[in-house]
Image (cartoon, rainbow, N blue to C red; front, side, top):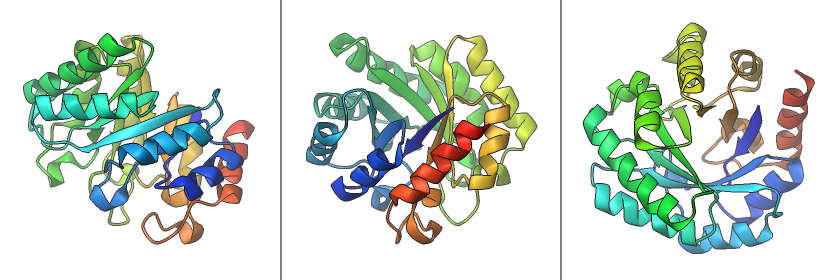
Length: 237
């Protein structure tokens, strides 16, 4: 299981890299759960990240505007991101989400077939009117994406497990694996929740708060010792 750590700036990116993160995921929590950062921030972090370490970039909690989102995908790609993550926030149903993801996949794959596209839904989609999280694996498959991800849209202390139990998460992971694709799970994931996610075969776990000082994703800063502790824990499973 790969450890994805989400820094917001160069300082935090260094901490994630030195702590041993597998994927450095550039985001901006001020703009939401999967808030997008600036192109120059992605570029700077890609430059400082070792070539053998993947850099991910979130496009934001995106609206149902396929052209706008596709253009944002191109921006992340040319800024150096290996992973392009799309938070399907404003898409209310399967068809809207599929249209957005097809546009992103075409944009990214036409430019660089080796880039990785992530279709991300929200375990608490009912709170924001987004597409049902159980549809995300099929959306990923039919759009040509590489990964299906679940996060939480509202960051109020509740975690992924407050909305989906381990059996439901197992179904999610198994379905995406049946399509030959990979799974990613996030959503204020705590240290003690890593083992259950590992046990169900999750491929990538996304973390910010648990890697920050004080466990605070907004006011804390990513700390290399916390990242290292999480990575060592995963390696021990």
